[in-house]
Every structure is written in structure tokens, then in C-alpha cells.
Image (tube, rainbow, N blue to C red):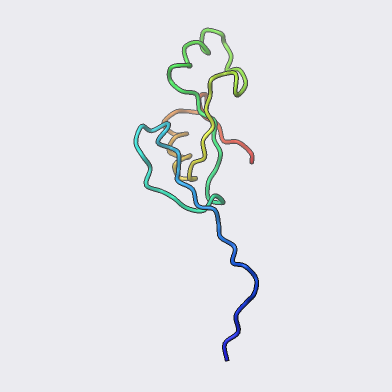
Length: 91
């Protein structure tokens, strides 16, 4: 005899990594949202004005963008961009 559950199946939300916004090429990773982190990154075109003003300002008025990326992509972006222009956000 086979028993079937009457509870609905829960589906994890699947999302594509958005690191291409920073790296300039589409990332192939897609997976559960639980494996991603939210990051804030300052685009290159806004950096000179922030250096001249001697501050970084606050999001969203500072021109930074927030994207959801896979954890290893966040590590790679942080290594390439540096902590001055990139930070992980607590979600």
C-alpha cells in the first residue's frame, strides 16, 4: 500500500546570480536564494566623485547598486574590487 502526503510541496525559490553586473559577463550559476548574499557595489563611473567628496555616501543616494550573488562570486568580486567599493549586507 502506498501513502501520499496531502501537504503541498514547498519549492525553494531559484534565482540567477547577478554578478554579471559587476564582472561584465553573465554568470552561469543559478540556485536557491538561501545560497546567495546581497552585496552593495559602487560602479566605476561614480567612484571619482566619491573620492573627490572624501566620502562614500549612503545607499541609494550614493549611486551604488545592490545585487544578489552566489557566495563564491561575492568572494571573487571582493578580491578584485576591494573593500572600499564593495560590501556584503546583512539580510
